Image (cartoon, rainbow, N blue to C red; front, side, top):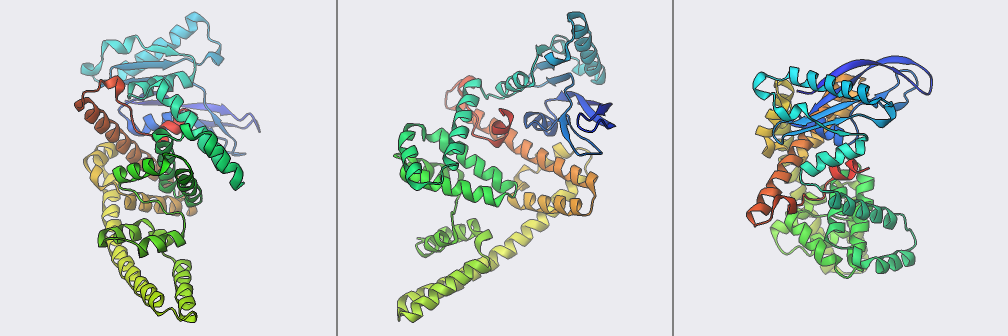
Length: 405
């Protein structure tokens, strides 16, 4: 099990002294805490007086009985002498071992590998998940390139940059970009998501291999990214099947607002003024078809929200949220996260901080369970194809993006 203790913290800004909780041991099978650690959210304290946020740089024991891992962080800045450091490690080991049932007290726990920095410990945890240093470095390079391209506002300069780095705009680049878009959408950051979608489409169009790679990724993930309402209208007009039409309506659901239908009505009025009866009829029929499809989606989404509410209640009331989520992994849908975000926001507005934190923990845990399942699925598939575990690379992930920072 994971261990924690209450410590006294002094705020470096206002010198306020207050109590907070610090985790001293993390069980790698506790996915919520594991990914909080990887994302840099573990042992972060906020001053109760001035609100300053600071890391609680304390020794930490990380272990995973299933993977036979035992790591201990002994921060070099603590300045512990050799004997004091070993005593600290020994105390941590004893606390963890004594907290476990007798049958789980494994020999490797008594000889943990020591790390002086959090960065080196996190790399070891990720490597145990099949995410190597080389993979992290590649993703870091791609993430930096994404930020660089995103910062270029001049069209000519952007085209020149794409031409310059064309050989770097490969499958890895577009996988990292796609996963970053998905992360922004999951977090409800529509502004960032749309900016990244625009970057993805423009880069794919200007690069030599981008269009083909993006089509492959979207086909594999069954995703549709839309840059604007105008693009949505044109794609709906040229949809080749009913299934494609409905998928586009679903993908562009958030765009089907007052502005969208106003824009469509203006195009119909423009066709009337030009005497273009064919376009007028086509767009009028399109508007009616979109409204009918949206109504069906509204009904379906309402049912999904009801199912998500039932699942959320089940998780909250369960004694083991992680097992409950794992048993219902197929029911963890975008509707579930939408409902969760709405409840978190409501709890925050009502100043119910504990409730908001509990719901946030459930969201983190659900994301962690999904991520863990995806890693296992990919490794299983690649091992079946004859690759060794070391060759099995995990997909691009926001978790990796955050962890390596």
